[in-house]
Image (tube, rainbow, N blue to C red; front, side, top):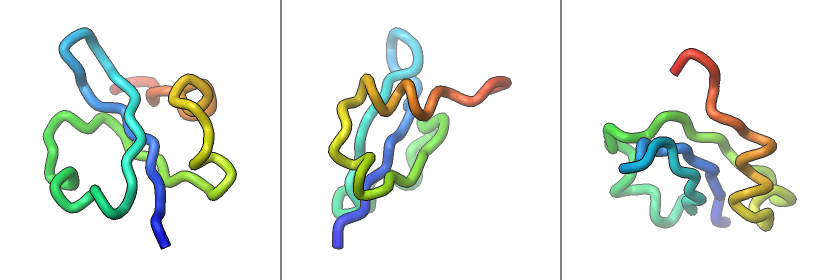
Length: 62
C-alpha cells in the first residue's frame, strides 16, 4: 500500500510544497532541504498542493 506525505522543502524562492509517495521516498530521506514532512491520511492524499498547504502550514520558528 502506498503512503503519501506532504513535504515543505527549501526552494530557490523560499519554501515549496511537494507531495511524495512512499515508493519514491527512498532517495529523498536524507535531503538537507526538507523543512517538515506530514504523513497524509487516505482522504488527504487526493487533495491539491494548495489545499494541503492550508491544512499543513510551515511550522513557526523554522
